[in-house]
Length: 632
Image (cartoon, rainbow, N blue to C red; front, side):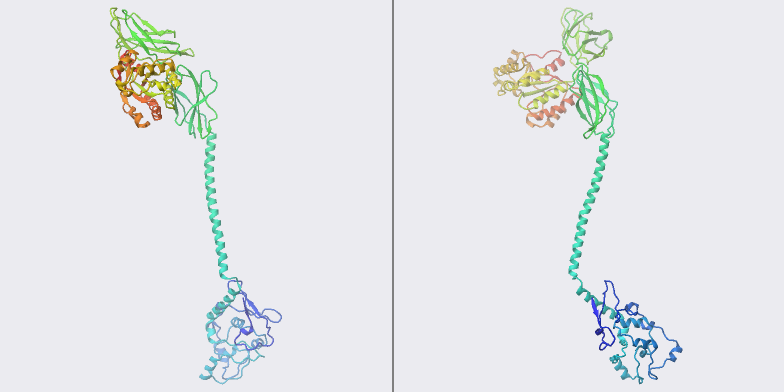
């Protein structure tokens, strides 16, 4: 802030009498602007104030006198300058500062420039006409000595009248310099501003991610809330029905439920009180395996989404599986017009149906024989025409709610009827697709052997296991399970250390004894270690009543240990009548079998033991001491 005093006026000499020596403060531009003014002794501000340079009227715009007024005015050279009453009154007032004087001048229209003496407030003596010399001296010293008793406003130089903008700029610069000296330093203000900007940026940096996170949270919350409501309000699975039934499986199907991710299948067996979840699927159907033949079940299906399930369910009750098909174990014709038939019994059956037909004809109602006794598994068909070729098949049934439910018929066997002079046992080969899966070198520690048994049991499939005698002695439970499931028990020598003609007969005998000790059954077939067989091995197998089996498909599972390669080796090459070699001691083999068995069943293959394969394809039992490789 700058202070202006009377001493600042270059044209005022000493301080005149009657003028207050107190100073007047003004505000510089940028702050609240105060107008510069001199205070009188009473402390009141004069009416006249300083105007900005932009508000001043140039001299050219001053009011011009009329021609009559110009003629009436006397010239300074001809008569003395007379003051107007207002000018005389102004001369008696206290002197104003050099800054306030121009404002007072600008507020009143200036007289014509031709009479500069009229601007002066004091009376002037009559002057002689101006010459060039006096004019030049006046320009150099435009302000005469001021009479202290009658102080008038000094006359400004022509340059100041013509350059008000430069004067204002100089004053503004001085004011700004004074302001900068008293205000806080610019550097400090800049630092404070930078700090404020940094704080503002930090707030924005913090606030913007918070806003984005909040929006994301709200959107995720909305999605989760929608899903939650959809899960809570899952509908009931309707129209569940049985699509297909076999002796060990059935197919359930149902309608879709909105917003369901999948479906849980629940099962209850006959004479049981509680349902148990048995499967989970994303499809609108499910194939349930591992069921017991000729048994009644109940099922229901619930939709689920995440951890939520349908609240209600509609059960499907009294669903049954059909009985196993009967296998004909013997058939011959020894008497004229008579055929003797024997078959495998079924402990879940209530009876059997025996059917026969003449070759080239269909099965007829009159050729059906119902046997309502389960303790009888053989029958003599009589009154047949000698030398006719007769086809025979057998099936079992059980009674469900007063109705006979029949299983699939057995493979048809054909035989020529005897005329009494000869015995006929000729039988045609079965046309049903069959293969035999075989597994060597077990049992050993681990889960692979049990996993293979699990999948075979689930799909009601059979296989042949060629076991090593030394391994059997430590895994009796595994051997017992194989026997209980109807698997064929095979001999693979006691130590698996000898091959071909180096294999002694004692190796075969010791293995047979170990298997018998483990489960009470003797092995019914043999496979040579490495598949290398000589005459000594054939002779020993004939002595023990065992046929021998090699293979038609080698999976090389022991070499690759790759489940995918094992699977494709079988599925890409399998044919009806094949005998397939694998090993039960590898997890990769168990993985392949778990994929392979369902697919083989789906393609219509019946998985049987080696003995069953030979019987079905030749019509007779395999011969001891004879080696078989396939039944294609």
